[in-house]
Amino acid sequence: MQHKTLKPFPKDFLWGASTSAYQVEGANLTDGKGPSCQDVKELPAGTASLDICADHYHRYKEDIALMAEMGFKTYRFSIAWTRLLPNGTGEVNQKGIDHYNDVINECLKYNIQPLVTMFHFDMPDALDKRGSWSNPDSVDWFVNFAKVMFENFGDRVKYWLTINEQNMLTLVGPVIGTLRIPEGTTNVLKETYQQNHHMLVAQAKAMELCHKMLPDAKIGPAPNISLVYPASCKPEDILAAQNFNAIRNWLYLDMAVYGKYNNLVWSWLEENDATPEIHPGDMEALANAHPDFIGFNYYSTATVEASDGNEKEGGDQQSSAGIPGVYKSFKNPNLPRTEFNWEIDPVGFRNTLREVYSRYHLPIVITENGLGAYDKLEDGRIHDPYRINYLRQHIEQMRLAITDDVEMMGYCPWSAIDLVSTHEGIRKRYGFIYVDTTDEKVGTLNRYRKDSFYWYKKVIASNGEDLD
Ligand code: BG6
Image (cartoon, rainbow, N blue to C red; front, side, top):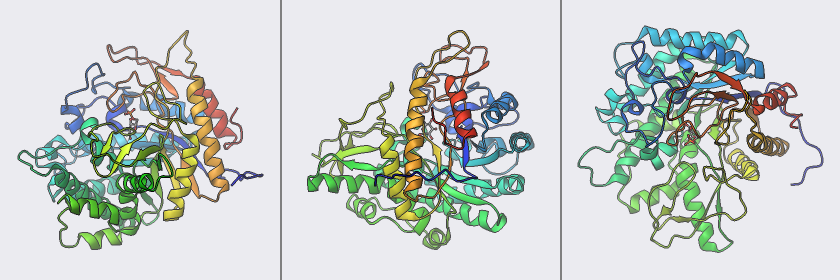
């Protein structure tokens, strides 16, 4: 549809940006915090360690003041499980509760609504040692953690996200440093989807608990959604796109919204003797949970063709070779790429929004979207026109989606402030706020406003009208 008149962004649209605890806070073993899987993993060569990051743990006041200066209506951050429960279960660490109370209160001081991610890639190490998500008890561990958060922060936090990018934990866990496969496992696919099943049930129970304990709050999932295009109009390529759409995207949202396993995924798992064991009560729990909105991270689309049976495993959140018998990745010739080789597809953002809304009919909040680049600090300034351009194009497409009658609640690019990437260090910067530090050496950690900071401030002040 080529619209002649654009609809405006909703009046109460939640403009903001995102971070995650293990990538931004530092202080990873301070004030009683226990280690998470991120703190014990082997770091990718040449990347910053996680004990300092952007030192947001100590500088959150300065950072939130800068977010307020940009005019944020919301700040999406995650709560580190091991700050609240150093061993994942058992004793609560009061200093961890105090810290997040301070962060939440600081946001509210500026009328910034906290949008809290409950779990962002940081399984407590103590629970990893007890089998991580392979252990059926992981459902109760997570629900208990959710209860601690709802009890302590639920009077002020109105927006909750369950599990960040559960689909990436399942598809590329080793790259992010999360997947634990118990020794002696013979069918890794089955074990992986057993873990995935436990996460799905944990999410469903946490959503139900949220509605019971906090009737005024809203909660939703936060997968990474990329619409999958077929490489051509060959019927076999269309089948491959349907396959990967199901495995990458719809499995997670069908389950969150409808409480049902996607049929294409289920038949693929059956074929590989990899269907998860379903414990009594699981399907009821899944069917009883209803998100209030859908949160999703969008970086780019994916393009695939029919499998030739020789695809190799691997890749990261936005890239992979394929899965034999399912799909083969295809380099989309129509799309430019970032310096870190991720495709850029703003129109694909609109395509994805339209598809998600027409499948699920729930309001959408974008929980991540952004461009990782090598920024340069020169005379106290950071000129990042490439980031402004990327964000501008995506906001334009979001507005077109709004005009298509897609119900949008908010937009939180990745990231509010520079932080350590999942596997490519702090040199891959995403923030509106530059942090003076490198992978090789901890710097002054001083904050600088990038050009995109001033630009985003104007965007927010004009409620998305002024994108120049
Ligand atoms: C998402 C994650 O996959 O993308 C973030 O939710 C991550 O944690 C972001 O940082 C960007 O990816 P990367 O690999 O560049 O850090």
